[in-house]
Image 1 (tube, rainbow, N blue to C red):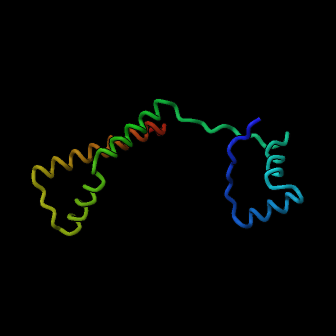
Image 2 (image 1 turned 60 degrees about the horizontal axis):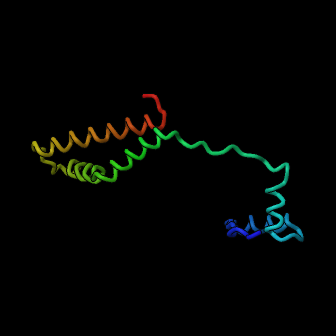
Image 3 (image 1 turned 90 degrees about the vertical axis):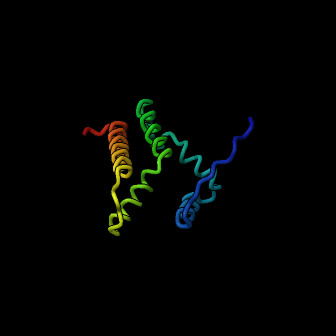
Length: 118
């Protein structure tokens, strides 16, 4: 029987010391295996994977976020508002309307994907 790749486990110094103490004369790997594979070892539920439709909505939101610079643009607008140097012309007004619509879509889609009632 060929062996599989080793399993790595990161412990704090205190956790390692406690584990070594509990293992007594056994090697750490033998002790961990004996505890993990014991008949009375606790069984945990598998993690619930989100339904495919939710994953698709979340992927669409992330893709849309990656394609835009809305966060940076809104930050720059807020900066100019705070400085009193923002001049609202028709082009900026359209950009603002698009940004607000985009943020509203992201919020609605995220809430739908997460199953939050609005």
